[in-house]
Image 1 (cartoon, helix red, strand yellow):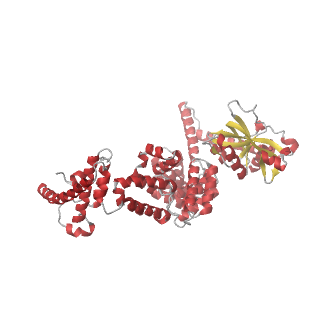
Image 2: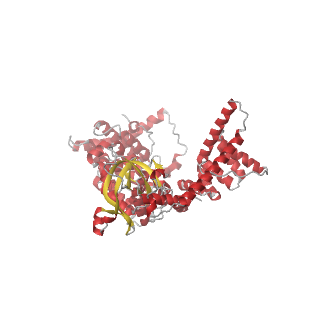
Image 3: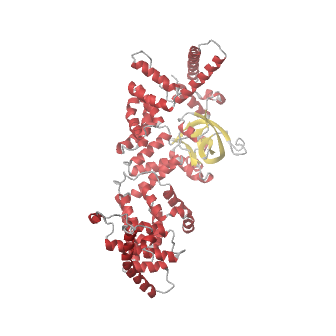
Length: 621
C-alpha cells in the first residue's frame, strides 16, 4: 500500500503547513475535472497526513524539547517500521471514507465526496460567508488593508483548501475587487499568486466586461507603485476617493496627459495633503513643466515626511545644483550615494558640489572615482589638475560652472581632433593660444552684436501704425518638434511648429480682453454681443499624438494642406483653464486616445508676436 507521504512527496514528519503546500502543488497536477481518481487519492492522502500530524503533534514548535536527540536521517528499517505503524491509523481512516462512499450515489462528484468526508460537521457556505465578512472588515480598515500579515492569514484560511469552495471564493473575490481595487502592490501580487487570474485571461474576458478585466489585470501584472504607508490618518469616509484621484493623477502624468494629471492631483491634494507619495508626484508634475521652485517645494515637503524617498533626494539635489546652491545639495547626494554608491550621474553632481563648496579634498576623491569610470575624460582631469594646484597653495582661478558639462566635454574633443590634423600636417602652430584667441574674438563679436540688436529693438515704437511693419519672417522663432519643448517654452515666447490633422473649432479669439479672457465660444459671442470684436477663429492640430490649440487669421481650408497639415508661427500665450477644459471635453472625440497639451495656446497674431519680441529684448542686459 502506498503511504500518504509518498503520494504527497514529503517526509512523514512534515508539519501542517508543509502538508498543505504539498497538496496545493499536486492539486495542479491532479485536477478533479481531468483526473478524478488521482484527485481522490490526493485528497485521501491529504486527510491522512493532517490526521497523523495532529494526532502525533508532529513538528510542533511548542514541543521542540521532545525532539531533542531525534535523528532525521532514518535508515530503511526505521522508516519501514514507521510505515507499518502508521498503516493501522490509515486503514481506520480509509474505512470511514469507504463507508461514506457507499451511502452516496455513483453520480456524485469527487469534490462532494471529499467535502463531506473531510468535515461533515462544518457548513461550507458558512465558511465562505465568514471569509467574505473578514475580507470586508479588512478592506474597510486602512490599517488592516495595508497589512500583508493580515492578508496572508486570510488567504491561508481552511476554506480555501477546499476545491469546491475555492472556485466559489475565486469568482466572488474577483467581483469584490472590481469595486474595491485600491490595494498596495504587494497585496495584488499575493492575490495573483493565490488565484492565478493573470494566467486565465480568456476565461475572465468571457465572463466580465473588457474594461473591468483590463483594469484588474493591470493591477495584477503591473501594480501601481504608489505606497500606502502614509494614508493611515486619512478620514475613512474619503479614503477610496482620495486613492482614486491620486492614482488617476499619477497614471495621467506617466502617460503625459498633463491636463488630466493637473486636475486629479489637485483634487487629491484638497482631500489629503500629508501623503509624501502624492507630494512627490506633484513635484514630478512641476518638474516636467520646468517649474523648479514649485517642484523643489513639493519634493522637500515629501522628504520631510518620508526620509527614505530616494527619488525626492535625487531631484532635490539636481534642482539645488541648477540654482548653484552646491553646499545645500551635498547632503542630498550623500543620502543617494549611500544607497547607490557607484551611480556615475550622482557622483558627477557630487563632485561639482564639493568643488564649488570649496571642499577640495572631497572633490578630489570624488573626481578620482569618476575618472575610474571614464579614464579619458578631459574635463575631469582638468578639474583634478585645478584642485591639485589649489591644494599645493598655487593661485589658480576657479573653473567656471556650466550646467551642461557634457556638452563642454564634446567641444573639447573636437578641438583635440583639430590639433591632430595640424600635427599630421607638421605645422608649427600653438593651437592652444590660437583657439583661445578665436574664442575671445567670437565673444567680442557676439557681445557687440547683442548690444546692436538690443539698441535696435529698444528703438522700435510699438504703436499700432508701426507694428505691421515688422517682418514675421525675420523674427526668431523656436522650432517645436516635440510636445515637451512647447511645454517648457515660456509664456510670451515665439514658437514655430508643423501641426497635423488640423481642424477648426467653434471658439474664437477677440481683439481685447473681456471678463479676464480673450477666447469665447460661438454661443458666448452672440450672448455677450462680441461678434464685432472677433479677431480670428481657433483651430486644433496634433503633433506626436498630442493636441494643440491655436488661433491664426491666416489659417483656412485654402491654407491647410490637403493632408491636414499646417505650418504655424506665433507666440505661446496663456489660456483660461475653464475654456481649455471645455474645448478638450467638446472635441476629445476627434482625437481618441490623444492627449491635450496644457500650459497655453499659440496665437499667430502680429500683436502677440511683437509682444514676445519686446519681452525678449527687455531681457537682454
